Figure 1: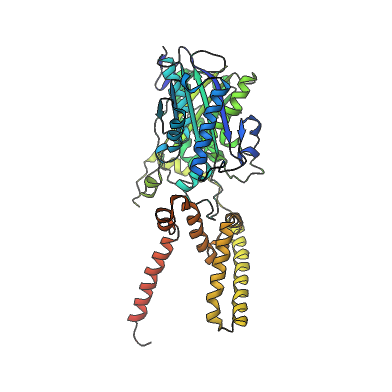
Figure 2: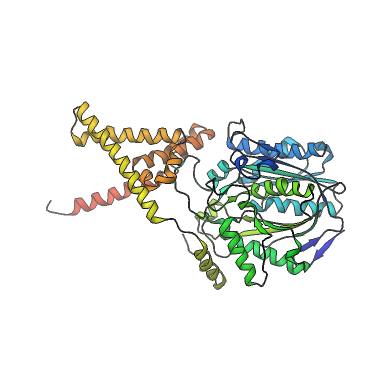
Length: 335
Length: 153
């Protein structure tokens, strides 16, 4: 069994394997540069369903089924399903869990869920409680916009620092044994509040949380940032990534060219009008379980640090004048 | 909204955020709003003249069917998914006139149709337009009161 290393980092003695992944991307994401790394690209934002909420859960279910199919496993061979999404009461995950019939623990970490579920799943596996854990997350542009902001067809001008919620779902099957990249360590973040109130600029709100978790990871492990092929945040976007880089530099941690953000990778920002980049659970979900996983399979990557950030506010807390509390979790993945 | 006091660390961070936050191009946005708002006004004036001539109405009365037509146009644009695309560029030019009011109601109606007619459309129809109506009525009341109290009209 592994153990704690430093203040917030957990080291796995028997690092769990990411046996397989499944990804489903929305039509707009399918026009982006990472489309070829997605298992399925939808032609329709509703995925043939009546409501956008049904569409989101159908995508999440499909991503989970794909991950299981790729590993030739049935749902009965999976011990635990960990999932979360952005919708109130995480309905996408719960309804998906209903259709899969796997024992389920629902998570809420907003856009940090992809990494939160990987970290938690790995701990459960390394603790010897399970043999296979399915982790998944989803977000949908129309469902998130309507919950957090305005109706889909409302015509308002977007701010230049606003981000675009990704439509997509990603799932990964973690196992105790098998072939694939391994989750070797996880750093669990603390909730941070640096006084941000603007729900249209979540990148800036989340940047301090990402910087704190990253700094903590490097303090705890003593690793050199340059030993990573890639250090990838979830959905900080252009402004958030700048602020995170700056915050770390102030603490004496200079990150180089290998530091990037999923939110800047999903879309072609020259052609797709998404302003500061992508946001949403599926930003990390699609990039990590699609693009990054495939690069590991091809042997192009050997060591990656994934840091997913989440803004933990709700429309109610925002309207009542509260600041936006944020969190970030990190996992180290090695070939 | 109660504003919480920022601690020094939060205040310092907010300064940094301000520095990095790109601001909207006010000149470009104002110009686009001016031009598109102007075009919409010309169309509205066209309808007013059309109704004045064809229906033989006074200029004042012809305004009513013209406004109704512009509302219909805003509603149709919203329903066909074109309004938000136009609004990205036109900005205040299309959202300040009555077309914007139509959009705020129709977009809410479309969005909450799935929750049924009573709990969805019925109660959420004014989710965006509600405050415009509320404060419009309050303002009208205050202005009316002042008007009634000033002697010697």
